[in-house]
Length: 112
Length: 115
Image 1 (cartoon, one colour):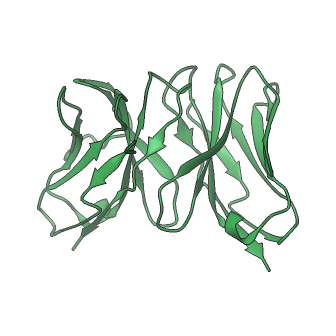
Image 2 (cartoon, one colour; image 1 turned 135 degrees about the horizontal axis):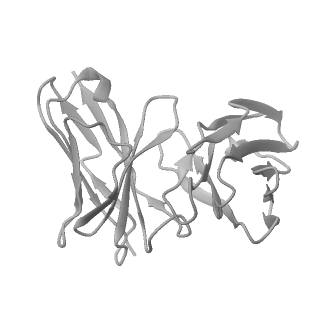
Image 3 (cartoon, each protein chain N blue to C red; image 1 turned 60 degrees about the horizontal axis):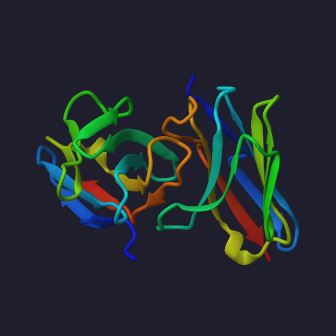
């Protein structure tokens, strides 16, 4: 199937706290899982990605974890800052080496 | 090192007119994707092209919409006889290789308004 489910649709966290966004995918052969950030009126930009041969990847305050057995992957943002406020999209291919399908997005609000 | 270029950035069309959206990929990229984004919604896949070849158009409406990526020049998304429901942001993205293993680089989008 071609289903990428993303939760929650909206998330508000206090500045300095952590934010976690989760996605599930349907095809066990999917091999690439990117996360994109889209600020208001701007283009989506890749912030981190993970391939199916690793379980976790970190880049400063951002990390992604992958559970291939459960077919889900999560974005973790620690020590959140006002500039983290944006819409975040996960994506996965419906089949190995296919196009990617995006989740519906999570609107993250960082509260002062 | 130019990124993905799209033009026009804003396009206003009356119902029944044609809209032509252009996308120039990152230099050296041979694969282009088109997505549609309605306000407050996600990115919906439309079509995936390689130069002179449509790889996957499963997300394209069957009527009025067409896309091409010629050997020379930009990729074009063409919408004939536009209707109000076509109003959306249309993003293209390019990648250097075939399939999901390659990062997609997005353009700034074309915001189409149908009046």
